[in-house]
Image (cartoon, rainbow, N blue to C red; front, side, top):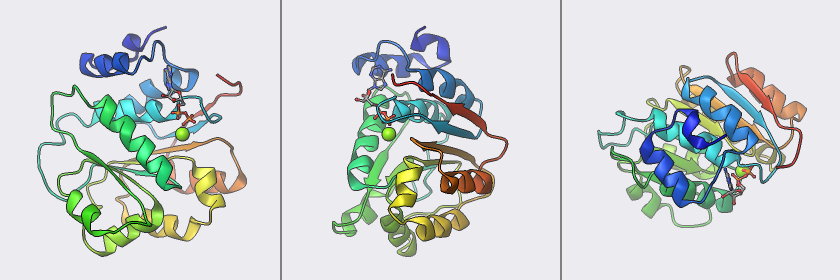
Length: 213
Ligand code: ADP
Ligand code: MG
């Protein structure tokens, strides 16, 4: 099985090739076609199973045509628990978007560094990868507008909850449009993750990968 049978554009296939991904991992095989269709999704698979590309690729594909206007309306928001993960996920967005035929900009935002460059940098951003606390600061300072967000990703949701971000997450959820695609990824399906699933996901596809890849 190869990436070319998943419904991705030649531009994305070229970028996948450059990353030397030969074939999709099990979570990628199952998640990509469903996310392309616009479905909500709960993906449970252990660390190292390739969860990042399983949402980055279909998000890049679905954004097509919605990225031409430059403003502070972001199209997609990826919430992550740590600065390291924000940087890492943003890198994957940048690598996989290299050959797109439409304008695209992504950015990582996290605390512990000055907020001003992030406020400036947000102009024209389509996909923001952020930690919850800094995201709220950016929203409070009007550096981004949340009412055009059409995709929300919660990556490492279990870790985000374990680190005590529940209150921030709830505040963020309340600021997002109710009509959107929501993708929830976690290594474990804890009761807290299940609560978020019930709160946010509408008729989700549930993908659970039991084995290591
Ligand atoms: P997870 O989020 O599930 O922990 P990652 O998305 O971080 O996993 O991917 C783990 C590693 O596997 C990364 O180094 C990534 O570049 C690599 N990887 C992801 N998908 C593939 C693939 N289809 N083929 C080869 N390597 C891949
Ligand atoms: Mg991951």
